Length: 313
Image (cartoon, rainbow, N blue to C red):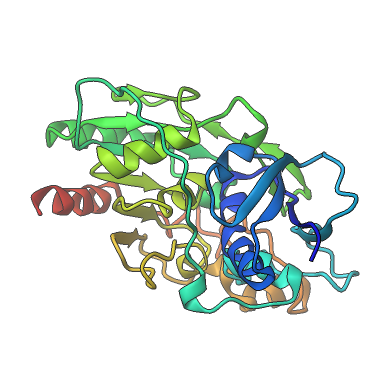
């Protein structure tokens, strides 16, 4: 059969993780583990579908190569895909001309490393990331959440990474890569830029009560574990992003949204409103209903109630 490979053309953690179902499908189809060219090699350690891992810029000559996320949103090409309307796992699958069934959408990882977090256990992991506006919960909300958790005697661990290449992502509104950042939140055990992906997975699988995050790389990483997940509401339909585990998007998963249920970022009505055509992604960084704030974002009290429910189980 020869050497087979995929090349995952993105530096974003969540997008790389979401390529795994396609990797698994190709490995099964070729009846052999395959090579992965990626910006995040550590993700694929010990993965049964992987023969070897190479850097994204390494030479791909001599491989039967399947490129994922090669093209951006460009209506002038035949590769135009509306990322806001597609399940993120299918986004990769369509690059090789296939669609995955619901029993093929789970993202599995095998890298895990124990880490000393401190004299805390059964803690809430939060990821107070700053990215485009519609999926950035405010600093005040995150701080109120942390304060409320301490009143409930629930410890908090703050994670994220804003110091390396994997903390950039493609901004579809600006049509360029932008750097992500992390809110500076008071309180909690601060592990910003201090954890590896295997260490985060160990925390999620062994000590954490739950993970609280918006649609982010941490959401997808948590989806490779058995941890409880609370995803905060945004303008994208959460069913297009929520992890699949055990054949379901409901396993140990809660979506806590706001008062607005429109999911305007995943509604074709706004494509037409903005561009006059279906095939055009609207500026999803903004509220497309022009509310002064993002009504799709949850109230802090509702997030606290969800965590309290997990604590009381």
